Length: 252
Ligand code: ZN
Ligand code: FE
Image (cartoon, rainbow, N blue to C red; front, side, top):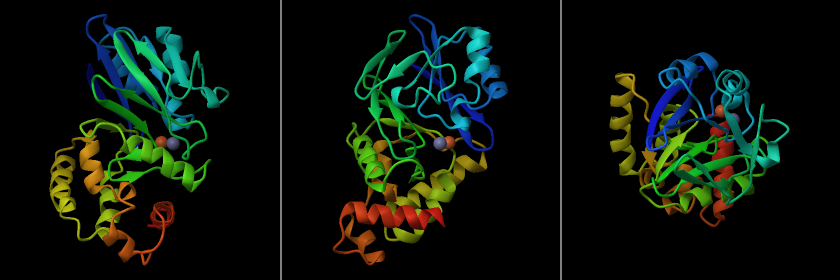
């Protein structure tokens, strides 16, 4: 599995996946035709388009790409009316193959009601869209805080060495938020140096690993006593801590 990162629009990432044995080419969340097509053009084909959710910055190039390359579009069953050109409707825990690569659908509602993530178990790769970002998580638009919390918990339970490919380059502003409310976390200082180095040389901060995220991403750390204390929520549940953090981040 070869993954090419394609920056789209102002801060989106699309991902091209090449499976070598059968020369199968797929793309995850093509937000912008021009940027994606420039990369796809090298391969002269596009077999599959995979969508995590219906937002325009993730499906914006579906129809143009499908038309040009006759690709099959795979997306969340629950949002089949909102995914342009959808051919294959994906449900929770379903397995699908793109060439010789198999992924499992993880149903992760909250940001949108039908949001899914793609988990390639053998390769230990997850495409998390706008649910889990590096050092952050997506806004809760169509679901409840509890749904979003449960969705993040599902991702948190994947193998620790899973590489996380998310939908946006929000890492720097997410870091600034974590530094305020998780100030005593030493891992954040290491992460800060690493992020700065990458951004200074125009490199994506993506992918991270789940292990790194659990150590540094405050939204996966709602059970940490120091964070609860900082928020004055010592006796609160993890969902209450999560909700408070999400509200604070919305206006950060
Ligand atoms: Zn979105
Ligand atoms: Fe997005």
